Length: 419
Image (cartoon, rainbow, N blue to C red):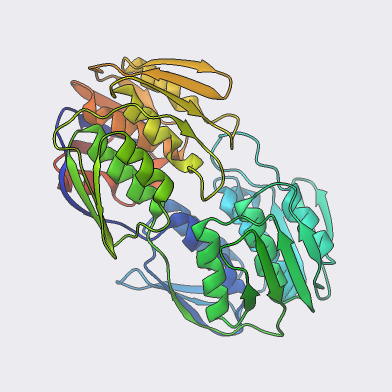
């Protein structure tokens, strides 16, 4: 099992190219099941979760080809097996995104209850209730969600809670339903918007994109299309925090700032100078130590839970005291204990982490517990004195493309080793 070793203390300086968004490409790949014709998806990041999704679709009979430009060509016309097995789904929660497309297009879906990061309870009841409202017969048997329907029918659905994957599953299913579907309290995340725009390119009829109310007029069929995945806002934020935590300067290229306002505001609060353009974001600390910031996570457009751990690392070495309140997942402070091993001064009180910034942390062996926690620990290693060894980095490969190469390009002393 590989590990990443960081020799800290180097201010980062330079440019980094941002990859396509993991949380956008996964539902878009699931949406290709709805198409009657071949599709191509561009700006695809080279990630373990993408590979897992391709394997899942391949097992169903979908034909997939990845070309040298990281474009995936998908032909779902030969799909014959409408099952998402446990051995794949257990490693990646996003596998549940095939549920809606399968029952909408083929009338049948057997999808294992999902796994993924151990960051708290993420129930699938909203997915099930939404599909039932659309007319599907759904049961949970032997660890599988089993859904059947002749043809789904439009419905008015009010989500009990904001759920990204729940919104995406119901949205995809509704595109082929007979009649009109209204989804209220829908997730507004940029990745949901990206999926909706891809569905539009395939011939879907959707209004209210980017708002909490989506209206979908079902169509008889969806055709093929080419779609370019948006840049990854979480990867972008992670590299910007890397610049801030090391008192450096980082220019993130091939990205966008319009869907990152909550994160950029907190970076400015920590003392960073931010410069944005049509496809870049630059952060410059001018050699200054960051100031501590308070964080409250919530659904978009508020501060994203997927950036909480990275700002926890920042607060560890910032001037002052920062309080982080996690309102989305109840078990997303598992990185705190590992940060304490580096010398961080943190007290956890329920859903709050009170962090007193220290002038110096020291390297130590630490262990990643989930995807974003692994990024947090790498960030902490960038400023810890001596060597920090991060174990179980398979987590980071689920969501960050070549992170050690990209950080090396910014001047970090970082390397990957086989255990």
